[in-house]
Image 1 (cartoon, chains in turn green, yellow):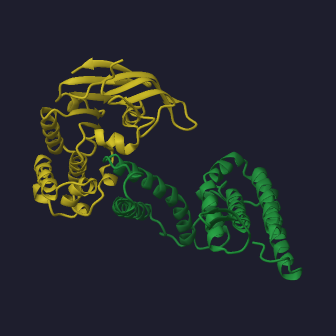
Image 2 (cartoon, one colour):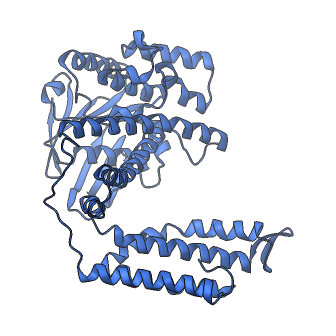
Length: 229
Length: 222
């Protein structure tokens, strides 16, 4: 079972190396990952409690809360998430305009490419709005950590009103602004930005293909023990 | 050492990866009366308001609210002493109708339902929202939303208010209405700090005027 962790660790190292070579902001990604430690602990405990495999490492009044299998499964989960985050950090090195142009050059309709870009930009906005609303409601003298769970749920139900109202207003304003700038006025679009594939892009593509193929070959041809990814 | 209600002691602050907006600021504001913080855009007015409220924590130095260091104070604890009005009232309105907006937080804190409603009706009158009492909040104008946000803050019983750019987007009539509301609150003994760049608005009050220039403050009396 531990071999899974080794394989995932190997893929994580590859993702880190690629991210360091082609993205350059390794520290930022590691900082983001540091926030995941509590997810790891929760996963380990959940796996230990609900996955009956493995031998107990820690019990409370006869109830097992930590097993070696839980620890391994939790580590696998953390490694998997880390591989995804480091791989995605390469995509995050492009600004939203480049993402749209990339999709357009891949012959994806401009409307869909634009929607992807709006979606990417919208998420951090939504997050900051959520933080602002949470701050505003706490500033009404609500100690969110200290109030009972049932009342806390009630508070959460209230914060969706301003968030949804804000999101709808933003979407409406954006569509008005797009119409005002004659979005889709002409079927053919030209762009001042034309992306060209550079050697770095080919390297990332080749490495991605090679490793994806390697996983499939290991899994299907050599029947590598158990599930890998 | 006797601390004022709001006290900043050699406070400096910089947003992530940026130069200091506030440097070595010392400030004492009493719990009563009117204080205005003025200054050009980007001078750090809003940052001071957020530091005084504990929303932002100083990079160095300390801020005290009623003797408590904001580094150890939760937002809820700060909010029970000071009401803070953000520039945008949109995300400070949580309910679907006006009446509910004024009672839902006091109700969560526990309290007699009839006295909550009485207080809400008094606030509705004070903030001139009588004819909007049962209206969905989405149908309110910008000025009405702002007055509702102030009413919502007052419903939670703070003894001090910090208002960030309360006159933005208001016409002369709504501005006069806001002035008369704030004067009433001052007469009732509430203290307030208004962050603004609207000198005409500030001239309607008497108190302290703090002028921000490059992260530092020059004080005059109005």
